[in-house]
Length: 283
Picture 1 (spheres, rainbow, N blue to C red):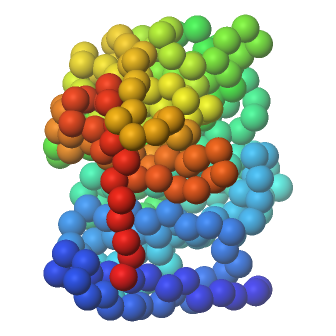
Picture 2 (picture 1 turned 180 degrees about the vertical axis):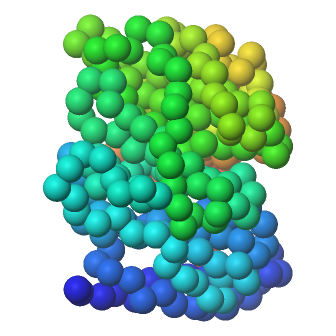
């Protein structure tokens, strides 16, 4: 098996200084990292594969990132179903999220109508089991793609999902109020198309960018309804939006890209209606 070294950098003083640790991993195409506190975190390493099937491995730290151990790996299988306690080989894995040191989720999908899944762990990522979800309205003949769950308290969280059918595309959400034990569907957002990025600051207030990066939507009722924002720029023509991070209902940040692919840092103080370019230097 080919091996690579994944370098992880951690800080405990707000970014003034950084310490380095390393993980001996298999071939890596990309990684995702998530943490629930200063001690417990996970890395999902995408080894190889595509939309139909993908091999991944998951690493865990319990000492703030100084040391990492592999707790789970997906192996090629001759059947559609994974071995007991393991994640499936089939499908691409699209998200990793934890609500505490024990309970977390991996989401994934296969490019077949209505075939997407969520697996949950209650032991920090060693053993996994599929979690049943109620169907989203109007998506029985649609391709589904889950994003990562996001939690705002120990009990309250959301699970966004894109769908694409022969007649339309859009997105919806599942919500939980019991720490992810059960999930309920929210009506499909008919006002918006499929999204690339979504950002909520609580269970009610959220923003989303469409896959083209040109349209920004906002909700104030937990995703029941979405409003397309009329956006203005105080400095220049708006770039294509890539990432969002709101900290209040008014103040938010975004990463965009100009037509020449130059990254741009943007800030809003009116809930996303007006954006100002923030000039920065990296020392």
